[in-house]
Length: 258
Length: 300
Image (cartoon, each protein chain N blue to C red):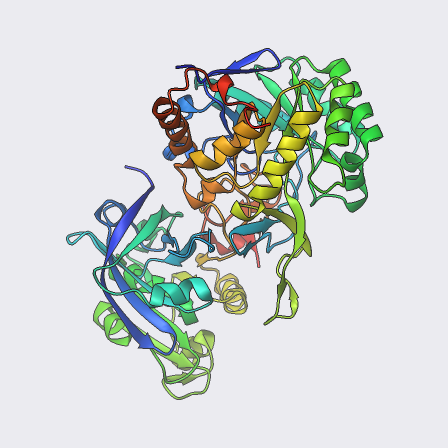
């Protein structure tokens, strides 16, 4: 099996928070191969919007051959997605990217840290964690989403910027306030959050894997649009660039510049 | 039925190629496309040394198209010869290496390095809008185009395609200059220079400020230019610019293109090249066209 483009059927779609939607898609060929931290690219029906939208995988149900995505309306493309109804279809390319190295979680205390729309991919990661997982999610305000699912998957800690739920502040504040410790970190979220987590991991001397994002075109490593800066000269590019869609989106925090 | 075309003495099994920069060196798309079925793989541009390319964001979507300012990131010709050429040699398709540079010496160094390599043709990119604003003038000046073409032809061991920019007043004049310099073929169009402004962030959508516009929105301009170039020169013209399906490809062929290249459409549909080959074959069957040459330049 390999990546493929296929038409998936929409099983369900609901708004779970303002501008945040949850969609289950039946796509057995992709779901059967998908792993935590990977993403799919979804095509718009409006042919004027030619590029597929990369969206992280939130949950994988291999038995049903289904994938869940939780996404934010960020523009006209994702707005189009949000208006689709169960029974409808979507063209999907996937599974894309490398995903989190789940085998490394064995016997470890693992932080699964997500910020904003970086929270959803941490859910499947929590479900498949082989160690002792603590999911730590940073939201803006009381509009928290995926809370029940995370609580079912293990220990769950919340931070909100306005302090309305859990720790006031960000995911780093939540670690400090709750005196949490880990041997390994997986994280996904905005660059400032990833920078803080990278610094924390270096200070604690623990490995940290971060999931990056950038504007993408092909999604499979050919067009070189979505690069990030690498610390060392990358073997494929021969320069200090790594392809987020192909070499990532998950990188060891010390191998990339943020 | 004949779908074979001949360009610069090289025979292609069909007239469908990949457009440089959209297909890497084929490895990534080989998960979707049987490269053996393509007329040719045209590689991402390669320079004498590795190039880091531009800062991100490097792409933005525009209505029915996209803009890119990758900045010709490439691993340099040495690694390319050791890694990418042997990879492509496994397949029964023609290999066209796109060559880029900032100045004539750099192009010549790459062309010289490729002389002993098993590649079928060279495509010289004198038209990237994203690399060096001063140098862009190079591909826009017929005198420089003719000179560089002649210099390259002197040392090249493979037939040479000059890839032209559409950012000119008179494409016929530039195509003629390439022909006068001894080019075996011309390919066009490269991307059109554009700009997009993000009104929410109140800044440019691309870090490079400007970028090359491609995709379905540029197709009518590309067809017009391919027609004008084909009218102006006797050497073969390879057409590209917004080709998404067989009908689009046939427009270029009827306008005078001997072959076509598929670029941005690969991002829209990774199977696009194969679907276009099948679609051209279906069209020929349906219209009882025995030879693709009956279609090339049939619309005067």
